[in-house]
Image (tube, rainbow, N blue to C red):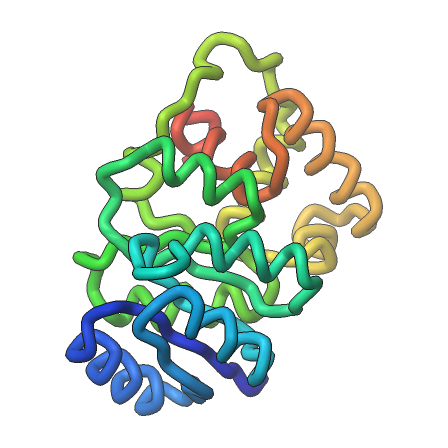
Length: 205
């Protein structure tokens, strides 16, 4: 699968390095941007598979760009690529549909892997991001069934409904049902948030 990507960061050396590195790993960088407004413009123009966004940028934050992508119905999936000192910010990102989170201190190979997983329809959560999430749900969630735990574990590995169904010998529709029930029990609004909560609460590993 051909993967296209827009990168947004307000530090030019970061943009230059990531553009070269991703290109050397068969990821086509369609554009780079130094602020959120420019990032949104480039995303709308080039419709990349994935956008890698810093959370703190001039004009529009990474989360603001993510919200606009959703509001405009753009197909691009978003990875938040930043430092993880603010758990509330990360919770906001999960609420508005972020597909991946990666700490800037992680090896750059992890970014390549994150882009590949997200481009394939999966989710990618850096352990540092999971540890930083602020969860008020401890002790409040109903217990997950064994099957719901299995589905969330495979979802955390970036598998699609079809691949999870084949792995567990159940239909994709049954997979969707298990995911939905797990989300309801965990109080999660998105699949990514469900995985984050399950990892945070040690419900899966």
